[in-house]
Image (cartoon, rainbow, N blue to C red; front, side, top):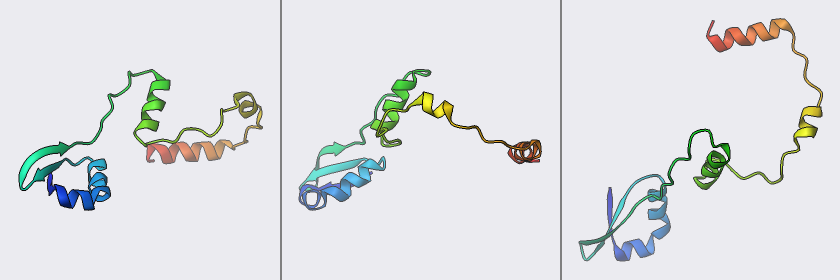
Length: 99
């Protein structure tokens, strides 16, 4: 937890907001007397299984970006599927298992 006097906070607001974004609390003082605190804004976690709410949460918290355009699933599934040899699949599975 950091403390800062109002004058310093006014001059370096962006730097202190960056500290808060990283999860740290900042106590604001007026002539060394605590008057306020700045806390990171937290959103409640979305209900499990609600995928739209989960995506909205990730976008709101800055962990994901909103898509620029809607996904055309028909065009996606119409794309040709890659061919992978059985040996490459076995090798990938061995690697994933740590063998």
